[in-house]
Image (cartoon, rainbow, N blue to C red; front, side, top):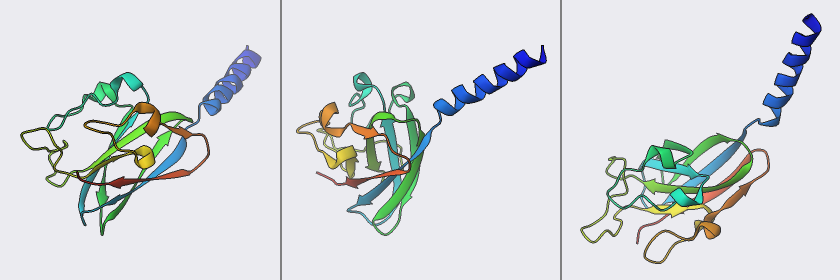
Length: 148
């Protein structure tokens, strides 16, 4: 009986170790000096780009989200993620309202950016253009947040 418990414990530890998460560091720069930064990690293409300007993101669409701080045009946020393919989107939330603020035409008024520093034309960039392969321990990426 004890042997079965020991074997089960060892197998459980091996399985838990195989899905171990690693640290992904996202360094951000902004054209504005200070303020909060919001970053979202997407792992499903069908949810990416669904949030519109002046609209809160659906938390069910985001794998992970976090709030950081930009100071002197720079900031840094870390995510504890398993290896995989992800898209990261960010905004410099200048008015601290939790959304990408835009004008009456739906044009963003706050700096924003995506992984691989790709921009879209009249909307978010293509999934394939912003997809990153997180496959190495303690990987760092840079996202430049810019306005239109």
